[in-house]
Length: 382
Image (cartoon, rainbow, N blue to C red; front, side, top):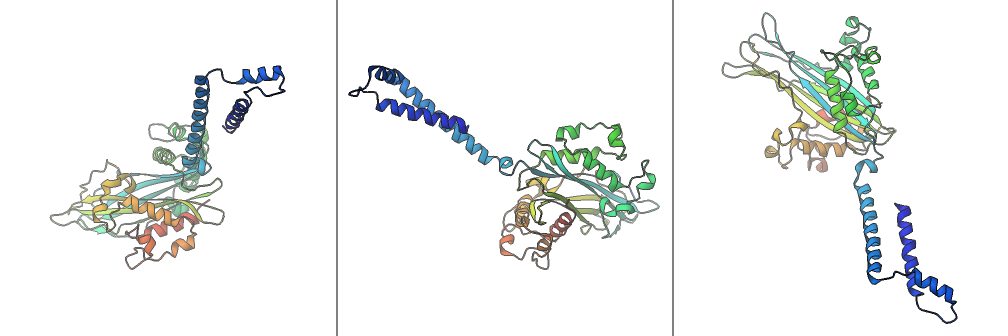
């Protein structure tokens, strides 16, 4: 395009020169005069047509430049980051002779992709939240929730694995296997009826079911966006879970066990500062009656707050008229440029709401969970 612009400029200068020299000058050789006259446009219409063409080319060049400016991927060197969460509650069970189990399995994937949509970095983890409730409809409260990756050797998969690999080791193999693949290629990874891999190379390191991992990775790649991620940035994923909003059943009202999980994906630079951030949450709720029987539909999955969008319904109750995803975006922007120590040091009040006036202008929800998950993400970034 630069070459074309230079050629157009040269042409315009030539036209101006020929126009100025079109009249016969005293002492000018006849051959030169004839050559100069022949170089001029033959008609006024032709002159206008050339001028119009030059203007059109200039406009196209300007438009192309604007397109390049407006393309975030071009601005950010082509790197983009995405995160997705896929949840199910199908493993939950009624209470009987023993306590019931309200189980929410949430697979989270974070990726960085290049300008061609190929994955250059991937992080996987699962919040497998098992909450108890009794045959009398009483929720069994707990605060000891760790992700599968955090449990490490304690998860206990190695003994049952045909390849002698613990969950975090198999997750690492899956992360490495998708490097260089696009979302479509991830979706196309061959699996059997139980969603276990059929590819020999992948099976050598991953024998667990990978259906939900494929889904989460592909979705993360598809929704990736340029947020300041640079080539060479590290990728981290942090998850925290509580069941604080769980409650006992009453004679006239169901009880519930709720797995409230917060997910934060970050990209960090060489100084450990956040260059990009994504925040999301799930509220996996299993309801039960006073006899310990589950009353929830366990087949519908769990949408994240970001997926719910305006349907989450925070805007009406918000003092600043902002929906959850809008407040999450404001928090994400605020975290960019901060280290783990600086994130942990963000001032909050007794209810963990922002004490900083600038942050409070865009975020009125409690942010303690976002801080904790973000710090985890920064610390495990690689």
